[in-house]
Image (cartoon, rainbow, N blue to C red):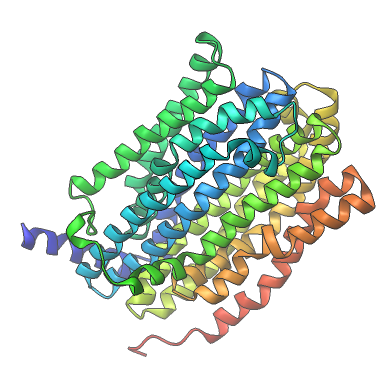
Length: 455
């Protein structure tokens, strides 16, 4: 059994270090893109079906999205942190280290997300107001949020398992669990919302049950021996330094997702000044534009295991080539998709909410976001690269740009100067500034990456 496992490990090492990087990035990014798109189905489906209930209910989806971003922040921090360390360990052929990191991350995610769920339930009403709810949106947001909080532990460990699978080069296995859960959510939404007449609570329950199934499928990949890393109590680290290393490596993800939550909260509060229609419009724009963004993130995530594995193996030329290819390919894909969406913006917004006020704000907002989407890949790809090779300091700075350092001043300043147009252009403006700041880091990496040890 051990001999067979060692042979599989060696085969995986050869695959990750000898397969042409363009083919490897593409093969790993395709299932990851699918996973990202299907993950977005949770929000797209909820937004679409809930919008039929009313404008205030539609706004509730945007409020709870900010809550989900908090849960995702910790899940992605531990998931990306542990996944990167697992991949670096496997690249250095240290399987025992990979098992320790994976097990420690899994159980740490359960504890942290469980704590968030309990505190969130206790303070649910003030939490919804903090995230930007109005009095009319509050009842819907509270109903929806309770189910999301109940599913928080499973949601969090799903992020951990998904990322470890990706970083091991098993993106197809990660796709299976995520895809099935997303499709189940689409099927359950109309059943619970309309047939069982549960309203917004039905959307929350559908999402929660989908997370249960998705996490179960992901866990089965580890229990059935499909991975080199394992989840077991005996592998849990008692060394605080291991947890600090996971958190440090995953800090860019915490900053990125945590700031996403803060950004959503600030956007909701700024939009609420103009009524529920503005909150609903920006919520719809966020969900729709993320479809294009998901392609960029998925392609970038295809780079991460390639870069971390080969960086751990000291094959630096492959890392450089993989990064340049991913950046060019991802930018081309995002540019094509955002151009198509730009011309269809009015039609798309109407499909979610045929409300003149929602359309009047949502259509120009979606067009503005499509324009900015072309430059987003530069920031995302560079950020993911630095994180995957363990350069957490630079990666954390880059992760803080889009939704934090650049966006927060924009959302606080532009609405005061431009009114509702300021809300529409705050994120696109932040995207352009963030991309410009990330350019020197991209050039620095290409120029300063060392030669292979064998050279």
